[in-house]
Length: 394
Image 1 (tube, helix red, strand yellow):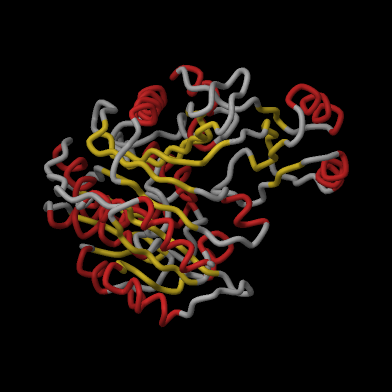
Image 2 (image 1 turned 60 degrees about the vertical axis):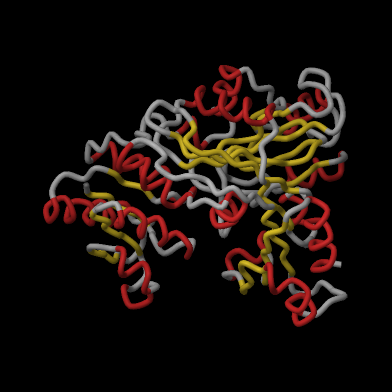
């Protein structure tokens, strides 16, 4: 089997997908814009061959790389980046090279566009916030008159909370339209609730082979715009209602053979037209693993190896792994430059070093969201998780 992995060096933990695929006997072929010498040794050891391009944004260069691998190794069976930024190019490459194991170019819009997602949520019976495609200020005011303040404005196609704002009054509304971005935007009613996510690795028939639940106490939009610290945690169990919503969403979008990250709001109060307090409302789908270190956090929570589960799905169409008996909360807490903290790095390590699974400086491109420095631990109870967050960020 020939598996082309686009940008296998970012995030840096993704070399483990390549490693598990190789263990299963897969011919893993990498395409990236980093030099071969700069790759981690684990990634080098996992790749049969690596093709460097000047820019992954130059489709013709990447196309030529795939054509080269096809000539050298024969039929290409999979093309994946597992990275939100490259999903559209992945789909285009699959279509151009007749690789049928993933999303094709004619379906990628329903996965990338926040506006087009709505019809699939409706198909799944999952409520979502009312939405308006941003055009004129007059049309925007009409929408606000229907849903009330505040409203959220965000790119129709985008990653995370980049360039996303909450508009709470006429002044903020006028300021947004005075500098209206050139890219397409959507406006949504504001939903009061806690952000949580459903992660799954799906098999050939959209059935979940593995499932996880993650909680995000502070909205990512506020973390970016208000220079707050990020904290979140993967959980040992999944609420039945979230599991049901996640599975229905997967089926409605026809998501097979993928590692997915689906975001929901859990309503903190009754909302006419959406549901009652505690109900789940669809936010957006991400047809790739959760970002950064989260796949490793999921592994720690479940005493599992989702990199191997993904590789087994690719090779055998099933999950051949057994979860460990012990389950944990795996907690991520970050720090940003310019914020004051009570406890030093040494104090954090002295108290939590025995349960620390990762602590490192993040890539600069991630500082606004993920923080400059992160600490990640695995703990047995929710109360211990909250105490850790207070100790690191207090």
